[in-house]
Amino acid sequence: MKPNSAKKVLVQCDELAAVTDEPGRITRTFHSPAMQRANKLVGGWMRQAGLAVSEDAAFNLFGRWSSANPKAKTLLLGSHLDTVRDAGKYDGPLGVLVALAAVEKLKTSGVALPFHIEVVGFSDEEGVRYQTTYLGSRALAGKLTKADLALIEEKGIEKARRKAGEFLAYAEVHIEQGPVLESRNLGVGVVTAIASQKRVKVTFTGQAGHAGTTPMHGRRDALCGAAEFITAVENCGILGTVGIVEVHPGASNVIPGKVELSLDLRDQSDAVCDRIYRRLHEHADRIVSRRQLTLTWDLLQETDAVPCDKALTKLMRRVVAAHETAVVAMPSGAGHDAAVMASLCPMAMLFIRCKDGISHHPAESVQAADVAKSIDVLSDFIVALAATS
Image (tube, rainbow, N blue to C red; front, top):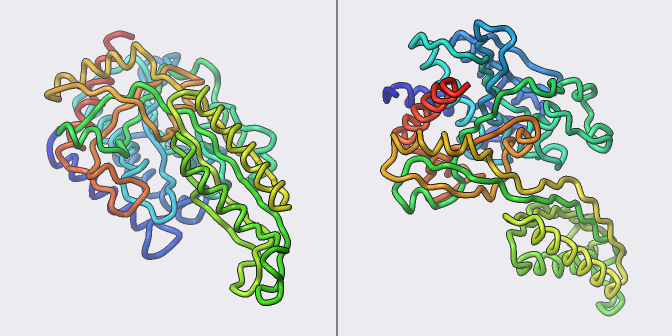
C-alpha cells in the first residue's frame, strides 16, 4: 500500500476524533449527536470510495461493494465507531478506515470478487451509554435480550437482525491494546481468540447519616463496604476492574448511603472467569452481612471466550508472513465485535502495534508504516479468500 493511503487513513482518524459529545476530549456513545455526525462523515468517505451506503435500525453504518453474482454471500469487514469516554483516536475507528482503504485499493485495481463486501462501522461496542456492550453487532446477529430492549430508549433496533447464512466471514482489524507486538518489533499480528468477559453492576446500600453526629460503630457506610469489595477485585487473580463508582448522596458531610459500581472480569478461560465471578459475589454477600448493608448484583453482560476460525486464521497467518519478518499469534484480552460475529459466521482478526500498549486513553498512537502494512495484509487476505471461495 502506498504510504499516502496510510496517511489518508490517519488524517481521517484525526478528523473523526474532532467529532465528539464532549469538547476537549473524544467521547462518542450509542446514537449520541456525535455518533450521528460520525456516521455521516464516514458514510461520505464510503461514498467517495464508490460504496453504496446505508444505516440499519441499530444505527450501524454500512458501505457495500456488490459482486456480479447477486446470490453471493457477503464478507463483512470493519469495527466500531463509538468510543469510551476520553478516548484515543484509533480503538475501533482505525479498523473501519483500514477496511475501507483495503476495499478502495481492490476496487481501484479492478479486482472482481466472487462475494459481496460490506464495510461496517458498528454503533456500540464499548457499552458506555447503557453499560452493556456490543449493542450494534448483537442487534445485527439477533442476540439482543428482552432486558436489553427494555433498557434501550431507542425502539426497534432489533430490526437490524440479518439473515442466518448471509455472511461468508467477518474480519476485523484493531489496535493491539497491549505491548506484545511492540516488544517484538512487529507491525501486525494474528489474533487466535477473544477472552471471556463478564460485566456486573454492583450496588451496596446502607444508611445515609450526618457525618458529625453518627458514631463510627453505628454506621452503615455503603462506601466502606464498596471499598472493601474493590480491594478484593484487585486481588482476585484474573483481570478485574472497577471503572465506575457513583456515591450517593455524594456530599462531604453525609455518610454514603448507596454506592453503585461497575465490575469487569476477563480471562482466557471461561471456567476460571466463572469461578472468580462466583467467589467475588460470595465475598460481596459476606461484606454486606457483616456491615449490615444490602447488595444488588446485576449481571449486565457475559461473553464466553471465542476462538477465531482456524481456516481463516491459517489464511491470515500466511498473508502476514508475506509482509512481516515473523508471525506472532496471540489471544485478545479485550472484547471485540468479532466475538459476537463468530455466532453468525467464521471470523478472523488482525492486530496493529500501538505505542506502549496504551489504549482507552488519549495517548493511543500508531505508526503510518504499520497502518500501511495492515491495509496490504487485509487486501491480500480478501484476494486469498476469494481464491478459496
